Image 1: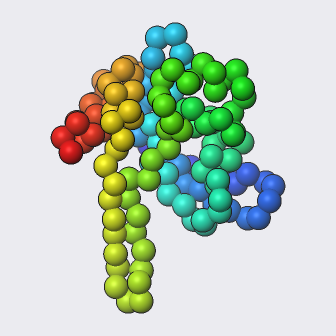
Image 2: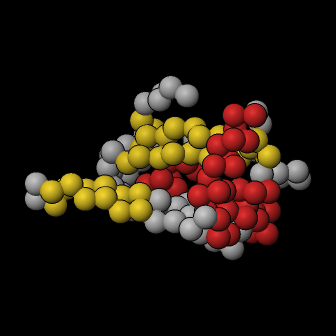
Length: 135
């Protein structure tokens, strides 16, 4: 999908979050979900969580930024907030460095349960699930 540009919350210090949809999915009995690839233009505390909540798409199992009822409904899905930093890139002096972290097992289990909205979504979910189980 085309990048629609940065998301800006409107309160607090200026911050920019870039969102790219990876896949749309659903789990019977729950609301639809979207797997996102997120990049930060700034690095504020709770930035991703607050921006997603502001646009009405809180992170699954986020006790701080979603409604209490939504959190209670999400709680059986995953034992933790479903936000994962899989990669970090930075400059250290003139040297570029990057780090990667595997997807937690609980996230892989949740991805296996989700059903893609379209065949392309199902392929993306499968690819991310395989990356988790092949660690």
